[in-house]
Amino acid sequence: MVKGISRRVVVVESPDRRLFEQAIFIVRNDAAGEGVTARQLVEEARRVARSCAGTRRGPIGRVRRALYPAAYTLLGAGGIGLIWLAVTLV
Image 1 (spheres, helix red, strand yellow):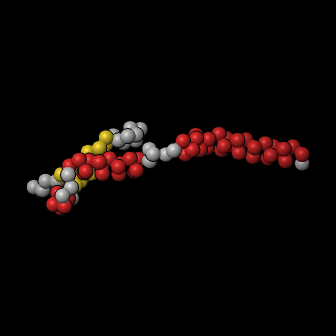
Image 2 (cartoon, helix red, strand yellow):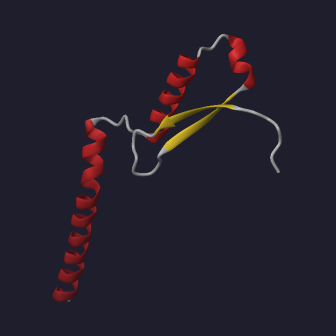
Image 3 (cartoon, helix red, strand yellow):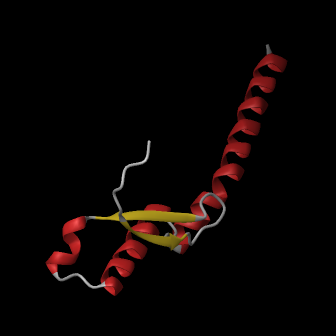
């Protein structure tokens, strides 16, 4: 059922399109009464969308995230090697 209530929304395009296309923010009714401009609403919505998307990671975070698969592969191979060595020597 649809009621006759209208809402103001701010739609922000996602900075990282792998998972999300848009972020939709529903503006509070009393926001306009507080002297907030439309530009301020859009800038705040963009700031929140960027912080939620996590695209502001520095180069260290990206490198660390890229090394995780290699580290797990090496740990797994080392563990299998130790098991193989223990079985062979017994």
